[in-house]
Image (cartoon, rainbow, N blue to C red):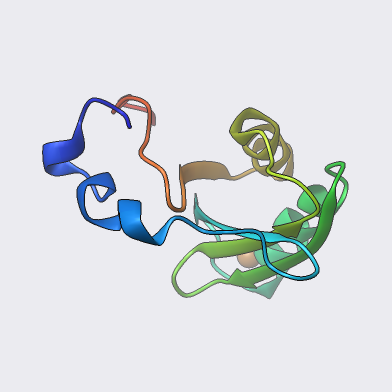
Length: 104
Ligand SMILES: [Cu+2]
């Protein structure tokens, strides 16, 4: 919970918290700024280097980045990897943003 439940998807998605799936845990992140396959490749490459990451799937059109990992990833580590690629992690799927920082 993030303290912002009334305005946040948490209020309606608590019953569908993602469970560990065979082959790994999938988490969907939202990444801003990707415009083409080259962007996706850069983000994918960085995320693939994060310990525990098994697979990375990117939908450039929506900015959705699906990461399959052997364990739950630290958002800060994921954000750092995305930043390393030159993009910005906007949100992590299934969870609230801790606070609405006015980034960028
Ligand atoms: Cu691009």
